[in-house]
Image (cartoon, rainbow, N blue to C red; front, side):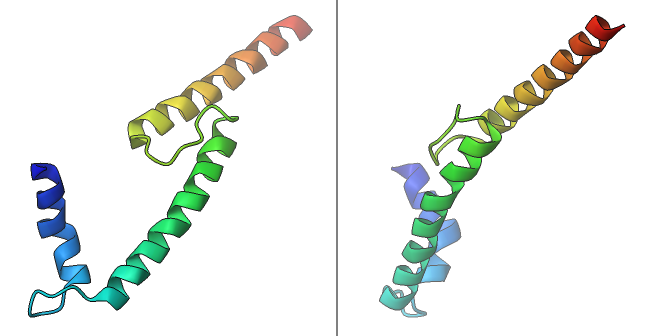
Length: 87
């Protein structure tokens, strides 16, 4: 729970609370709406750039980057193999 509290204190509190510390429900709704959009769209991008290998929202960036790097490296290898065959 300490991580949750830290993120709340450092990131969200100033965004979704009024100056008196009460919750600004209008702002919470906006943030939830924006997050809903991200939840809908990011998996589409991940799936597209990883040829369907990743399709959820909560992957660490390093996982997505590694997957894309692997796909790019495989493409370079295939191109090199094809060039070798055509020689």
